[in-house]
Amino acid sequence: MTVARILSEKGSSVVTIQPHRSLADAIHLLAEKRIGAVVVAETDGVVLGILSERDIMRALAQSGAAAFDAPVSGHMTSQVTSCSRSATVEDLMQIMTEGRFRHVPVVEDGHLVGLVSIGDVVKRRIAAVEAEHQAMRDYITMA
Image (cartoon, rainbow, N blue to C red; front, side):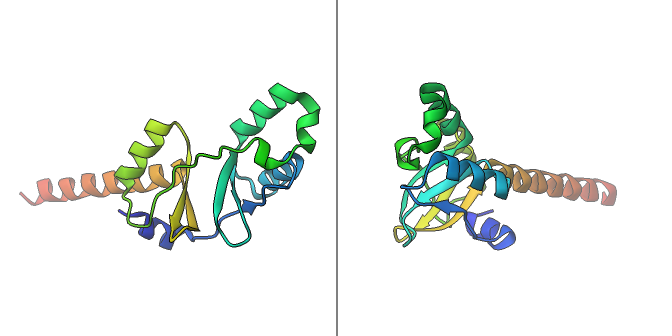
């Protein structure tokens, strides 16, 4: 299964925030949308970074309450690993495992076109394994 198929099933809408916004703004956005990370992007969709709950916790541990007023750009992960729509679930599992992160922006022609989370990957992988098991059961009962 490819990222294109995942996005066609789940949608390609991505919650973003601009780099000058405060960490407090980002925290409210994450809580409102019930998500664990937000892509930091310009209005034209160019990805500048990603801000996760982990990044926020590090900022709070380092700066205390003063972190709430800091710009997102000061605490985001700026070296973002992204993928294209042609990436496979197996590619994503490897990328996420090696990088130890749970969200991968989908970028094409330099612009954000979607976001895939570890939950999306696990859901599709489990569905594929269940389909394989059902095919094996069907094959065995026919033999």
